[in-house]
Image (cartoon, rainbow, N blue to C red; front, side):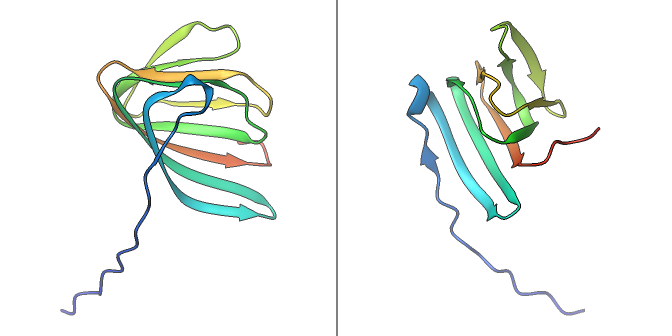
Length: 115
């Protein structure tokens, strides 16, 4: 059996400071412009907040580990745990955070997502 070579690429972690965010770092995995598609991994530290903002693309997020909360335009915090998914329409105000820490994959597209 032959072992495949592992390609190691450096995915930079960027501290998010916009929108009064604290304790959130992101790694960009994919960026395409036509059609628009973005994929990020978000790392939430304990007591973190990704501050309220709006996006210009459709967004679908899935919690990969631990837990946190999400709040849409109604500003009501809804708990989320590993395996939960949530989405936002372009222009929809939202925020998220975690008391204990969590990891989330975020996919954005100029096309709506279908269940």
